[in-house]
Image (cartoon, rainbow, N blue to C red; front, side):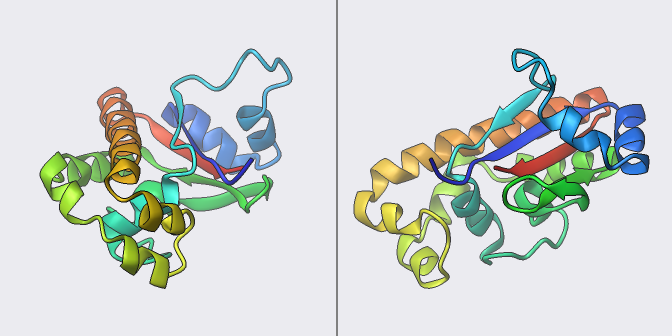
Length: 165
């Protein structure tokens, strides 16, 4: 199965409620009605860690704004498989969206360094080493999903809930 990163935007009231009531995070992330996934939810499949490394040049740096795009936010609630969900406030979402908007496709492609990712023990880096440009296309597609997620969430004034499961 693997480790998949999920992102869901949420309005400021919901973000505040989740911070105040950490037990509600599990209900937000995994609603009882399996057909009722959180609104504005996307996933980066298994590309999340490679994308994070390409944005930061680091395995786990969460320095804002780019470090917050995949691994940022304050942990809230129970472990969801690979740690608790993390919450970003609307201001953080806007900051991340602005920073991501500055990284066009050419710039993103120039950050692709499979050997460095493998040396840094980045999740899925071995696949990048083996598949080369084919893996880059997969990462680029998922990066576009991330950019659009933050752009749209920032446009609505939303915060975000991030988790890996």
